[in-house]
Image (tube, rainbow, N blue to C red; front, side, top):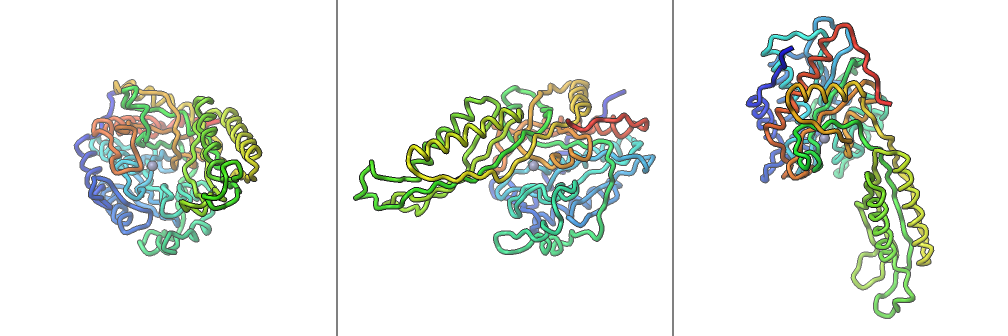
Length: 419
Ligand SMILES: [Zn+2]
């Protein structure tokens, strides 16, 4: 059939108008979860979706479900969704693009006078970023039954406010849960947040899944001492040990290829210019698509850390604190995104997602896949985050046509879950 198209001007208008909530001086957005800015954006989304003829449900986690009724409401629905919270000094596209392309899909279907066979649901998942309340992806995690709601309510921010109190304060704690399962298919359109699409010069990225992840906490115990009188050959300098370890972590990540290993946080004690650091605490984040290879890199890094501390006569404690398996998407939906992009004459690129998204959890319940669009300069989680309007529209067009194909399929082609 003739391909459906979204309206790029209206998409731009929605994206520009929603960026007002939490707008920063440098063209970014600070819209922390459950803040007044988050509430403002939520109210605006509710208004727009209502104007577009959607029903709304809000569950006890504050997840907002906007439902465009289909012809047969007993059929499993098609879903898309992302998040409207941001990092502090974050960008105007991360997350919100996935909701606004869903809104534009609804509007374009309205324009075309199409009533789909199935309900089409656009979701705003609460607290994806995990910046104000850690961990992130809490809304989708509770929805998927992987996180406990009461535990999430008890999370506190820096000022001692709890998630539950703040959810109530902004008036987004629903009274009952909304459970549209089983789901027929789920899509999430998101900015890439990396440089790959820009480098290959293609507007659409088709991730086959999300990489696996390992988190470590490491502590090195040396001996603090006066920097002046202590000879170089008689030191137990924990920061020197850390430097040797950090170098090996980088080298082992680099040598493995397609695995990334990063030290993001370092705390040296006492952190004083004339004291040899007696103690260092640091974190390691290791990710890769190839799970056995990633585990091999983890083992190599653990061995390197142990052997360096032994050689330098210091003790070290390594703890693996978080382990997430890779999340392969539904192969049929991944192919559908490819075919759809081709039909729309949009060059598409196979890739994996190095960042986590709400779809990590929804992928466990429903056949799912993601649509990526390029991030200019590969930058994200920063005010400079940028995606061209044409690329936003390309992502919206792919989403619209994938929604049309899956939601207008009364026969109910069964899509398989990822692996
Ligand atoms: Zn995001």
